[in-house]
Amino acid sequence: MSKKVFYPLLENPYRKKDLDNAIKVIKTGKITIGKHTKNFEKSFSKKIKTKFSLMVNSGSSANLLALQCLINPYRNKRLTSGDSVLIPTVCWSTSLWPIIQSGLKPVFVDVDPLTLNIDTKDLIKKINKKTKALMLVHVLGNSTNMDELLKILNKNKIILIEDTCESLGSKYKKKYLGTFGEFSSFSFYSSHQISSGEGGMITCKNSEDYEIIKSLRSHGWSRGLKKEKQISKKNNHLDSRFIFFNSGFNLRPTDVSAAIGHSQFKDMDKLIRARNFNRQKIVNSLKKIILLIRIFIL
Image 1 (cartoon, rainbow, N blue to C red):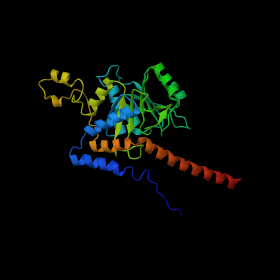
Image 2: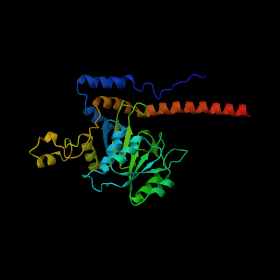
Image 3: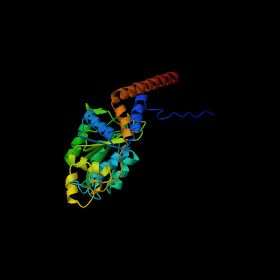
Image 4: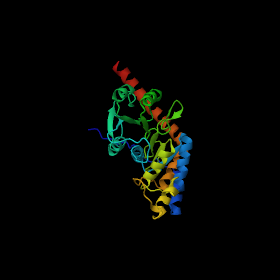
């Protein structure tokens, strides 16, 4: 009887300098969300070339915030209960569930069996008057034909949300995946391109959505928003530090995870090159095995 061999998804993604950065934060005694998170957000926007970035505690939370923003009363042209959101059949559970949790109807679209990414032909068949958004999942660093997809979405006025949790750093025609849609989610789980232990990022293109997401991320309060003073003035009988004007969650990261994630993000290109090198070694080995099998059979 053959012995079972266990191959871990990843053994240890953290370098000494990543952990040293985390230790420095811990030693300050200020480990909750703070300046390290803000610095990471700024670097992320600059590198990926997106307008607004907010770090959260996971890529799943990023997906949830995107959908919750779309139905939020403070958003112009918000989605309403019963509106449909398209989603590919190959997805993650927390790509799907935020659609349901937001009172929207998920509609599954087939994928191309060769790439596992969404099939645009089936996508067209699934569009109707109720279709308002697409949760697009970029699988394993690959994407569908984005030019073709964007034409379809623009023609039908469909909002694009990109689940880029598996594909940070990947590009379509020299443009980063996660910069095509109105919203995008990224994950920094331990097995992904960069890691902060647990963590993620949500990006968006306009300030209205950014302000809503920022509030939703932190209890629904007004703290740190552009209209904080305006909200405080309307509610001058309340402590301005604790005005909760919106629905909300607590999906914030810690500065410890931000420090680790930012450290890795600075070397993202280097880390991706290493992954590509290792992948090619595996592919070459498999090709040799297949060749030997063919020779043996013949």
